[in-house]
Amino acid sequence: MLEELRIQNLGVIADATLPLDPGLTCITGETGAGKTMVVAGLGLLFGGRASRAPIGADRALVEGRFAVAEAALELRERAIEAGADLEDGELLLARSVSNEGRSKAWVGGRSAPVGVLAELGELAISVHGQSDQMRLLQPAEQRAALDRFAGADHGKVLDAYRAVFGELGACAAELSRLRTSAREMAREADLLRLGLEEITAVDPQEGEEAELAEEALRLENAEALRLAAATAHGAITGDPTTGEGGATDTVGSAARALEHDAHSDPKLAEFAERLAEAGAILAETAVDLSSYLDDLAADPRRLEEIYQRQAALKTLYRKYAEDLPGVLAWAENAAKRLGELDVSDERVAELESQHAELTARAADLATQLRASRRAAAERFSTAVSAELKGLAMPHAEVVAAVEPRPAGRGTVDLAVETSVSGASEDGADEVELLLRPHPGAVPAALHKGASGGELSRVMLAIEVVFAEIGGPPVLVFDEVDAGVGGGAAIEIGRCLAKLARRHQVLVVTHLPQVAAFADRHLVVSKDTSGAVTVSGVRVVDDAARARELARMLAGMPDSHLGVAHAEELLAEAAKMKS
Image 1 (tube, rainbow, N blue to C red):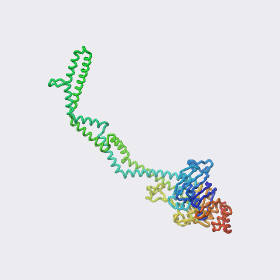
Image 2: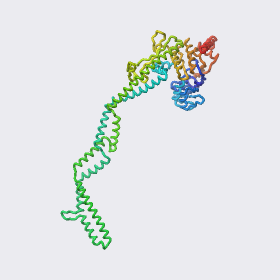
Image 3: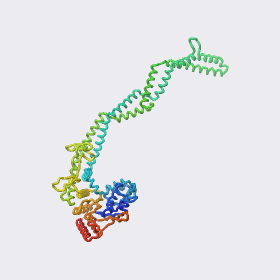
Image 4: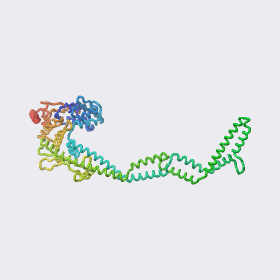
């Protein structure tokens, strides 16, 4: 439960502390005193939008002390995750908001994201005001309310449906992508295949360019090379046609001349040996030159082949990359991209089969959802109608109608039961709360068939029904009794008191009939000083409480008759609560 709430500089409240107890706490005060700032402060404390709260100074601060029960396991675990120490069972929360919109949050004395306050708020508190009544008129909110009432097993079916529906959407999107972009992808795939085929046909090899250039240079200069080699060969071997000797003959003669007298001087022997080696080298070179000349035959056909090969490589470089490594990298990437551009009939058929399977599963789960919703709708209608009887609407009945959504109104159409319905992530049903004010009347939508006071009581009845199945431990109602008076107001007070037996209930009210049922009565008062209005909060008991009720009844807190009427109202409320 919320044990204490402190508000600083929020609207007209400069600094106020609200001591709170279990049961029903009613907050009253004159118009403009700042009662709604209490609700606004709770909204800020539990992660609400700061832009909706008027800041009374440079910075507004809201602090709350929350007693966390041992049974509230989810709330305790989330608070501990945020760094809070709950050994004493208390959770301290704080939120500050500046005029510039900057916001800070603290959980258990430690700084935390504002989103953590919102998460804790969903587990700890439920705030209801006239804006919530407006939301209740929306079909999506009514469907969510029925799903919440339906229970955990229904929630599992809804979760399973949403999971399958998500898969179905992804499959449909992929199938649509393949179908709509098949032409573009096929064109890209054809271009990639042509490029790969061209590169494969050329089959470029590492180092090939240098080898081709060297061979082409040799073939291009074949005659000049032949002349040079032949001249060198003739100089070494001589000319047999003229009998003129060559270098080998000359070197041989020199070596033999030295060998004749080498025994007389060792140096001559050394020279002779060196000349013999030179002769051997010359002879070997002559043989190599002869082989070179044999292989050097001019080959115009081979030179043309080289030119064609070089042109083919240059074509690859012009189309795909500036060098061989780049061409090979392009081919590798193209092969990978072709794998991604799988537009084959097999892939489309696979997706179509998967889509059909997911559609059937979604339809089956949507059918289960509809059956579960209709069963829950009967229980919900019975329970809410029973509560309305105790809220001065004895003949009224709330009907939760669950009807198939017309085909074409959802994301996809599903065959649910015996007809085709438009389906979304929440199912294939339209849920609408209808009010039958008396037997024989035609049920009408809430926004058409309910007055403001009736709508307030319908929402309160729904909240009572939800309280029976669990929910947050703290319930806050902001003028939920608007448009109600007389005996209906008494019944609302009684209903809130009943609700407070299992929850901590905070009610901002302007009706004395409701305030009379409070276990604790807080009055927001204002003190005007110049142009500044400052509000404070005080607890009223006994005579002070009777005076406040007299003010609410007739605007005369000092009237003896008004006070007597208030005391009678308090006594009657005490009897009804016991």
